[in-house]
Length: 554
Image (tube, rainbow, N blue to C red; front, side):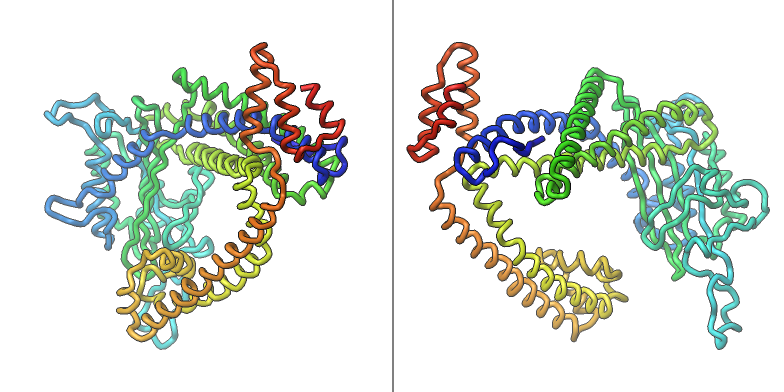
């Protein structure tokens, strides 16, 4: 991956030693890095493709954008009441979930639902709700006569786990998260646990419609309901992809409905085609690379100890290795879990298969691999810096780092002060300022020019314009220009300093030297004289005995 020169040249500031160090560093590290980088790209792009996007798109459009009824403009995205939720489940949800006939009304195979005639419904869908207890909040004594019941916002401490209704079956009896093999969900209003009251639907549309009618008539949803989850999984054999879907309807304590959704398209069955096996070979090569880098980093840390972490590039190397080892562990775990559980999940067609843990492992691995690729790209700057222009840019950033840190402190003090002002003034009326986190992202959008001014003007005709004008003035006209001035001034200094220094080995020199060596090995060209002339040119016409002997050795 690198590496640091140990022994030999004690003072790298001296030109001969520095030239030898740079040449050795580039010749040894660049090919390894490029091979490692190429393997990372093959592995990551072998897991993700455009088919995943189109698969997610068609599945989401089917359930999110279908009107609740003919002539109705409301969809799942715009649900606002419990009655509309039941209308969705009995209409677009059942229609999208159960495709039992072709477009010419010919029946599909019994107990098989092929969504869009291509996507097999795995098992049966599941409805699950989480509730809060009555009297989980306190009402002021002056209003207790009018307000008899009180259902607080959802928290784990407020969650209701008592039986209700007919008190028979899983729809009316609480089931723990571990028994459902579920996990928490971060919704728009709160974070919900993986337990609750659930009802598995049937393999046919008519039976499922009957179950939904029964739940509706017996008031399965009540004032204590805080969220309902509709979970299902489908598989497309044409492209070997699973889609694990979750539609979430939240019923906040304020009343109304907030909807959200999650479609996770993943490749759980990895090794099917010849390309898949090629990716598998690259995964083995990746593991060997990481094993080599682990040993290399351990030896470097043992030699240099804490001094090793003074270099940003060394810290980046360690970070890449740590992430890579973690990704390998996650991938092995994912493969093992899929091999052990996939058959069991698919055996019972009348039960709901929980693919969520498998999808979570796959998505985690994909995200870690993506971050590794990002840091590998960043690492390329280490070698691009041997080019004079790129070296100027990187030196500029390192020199002005302290000034930028001071500027960042001043910038974020003002930035966060305005975010708090916006949250307190507009938070109750404008969606973009409804939370403090939303205020922060909205202000970044203001800097980029992506903002609707009329909303804050309508919310507060006096403070709205004052906030907007002063924010743009201080952040955009003053602080942003100060940021550019710091970088511009430092760049001018660096450029002036480097113009007085003789250039080190350029990337073009390295490529030329590599080609000449390859030609020499093929007995097509002798390069000793060229190497000596290159060394004389880089040394400013002076060449000591050590450098001459090194060039004569080739």
